[in-house]
Length: 163
Length: 199
Image (cartoon, rainbow over all chains, first blue to last red; front, side, top):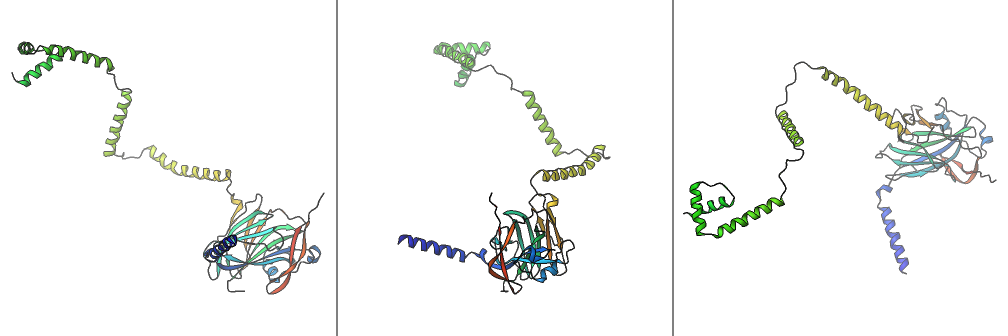
């Protein structure tokens, strides 16, 4: 009985602590997509991988040296951006090969926020940047090669109100 | 005889001072009246000899010349601070050299700073890229370079990382059981696993 009471009190204190932590407040949301760009037949190279939204291919067409014929979608995820805590995105579900950590670097505005971004490959940090993101504007990170193509991480800032 | 005069004569006598003839006459009368003063004088002399035996001979201050020099220098410095010397009307070649040496010293410090940053673990300029919108990309892995491209007028940006270790082709993709939405279209979630070969 005493143990139950102690555990209940501890749980209550933890719950109250998290509830009152302003750093845990969600200030925006971040959509991450992991794309696979290849000039080969997508179905032959990676069967069962769906074709990515054509908007990605359209935006990537503007790059001279980094444009592929086909783009597959390996994963997508939407995660909250906390006011003062780091959050993680692992768009490739079931794998931690490609990870992205993100944390606000400045006050979140109505139209955007500046984020500290870290890209991890195979549990090794390969890139760190501070980048201003605007709602609906995409940031792509062209990552490692794979099967003759390339893995590309797409990042889009979503406003808090959009569901 | 006054008491003060009497004490003065006795003290001078005990200190072996030379007295005049009249003073000796006065002292003779005092000693006749108080013969115990002779015994006191002997004791006083003994005490003085004992004290001289205990204390060493007076010696000069050690390093006196050094302290004297420092004192003189301090006095000269104080005088110069109060009365700074007037600058010569025409600048000497030393002043010209001083102006020439200033930028050279600044340049040397800059070179030393850059050399220090290369010797340490700080990122080399090639691993630190700054874009037009002041984004800074740092690639801690050796051999990895980054470039930032503002792709279009719609606000799309691309960070291109070159030199990353390629993911092996054996890294297999398998269809997962969850679903997610991208751009309002439901697609199948793909999970990945490394294929492990056991020998």
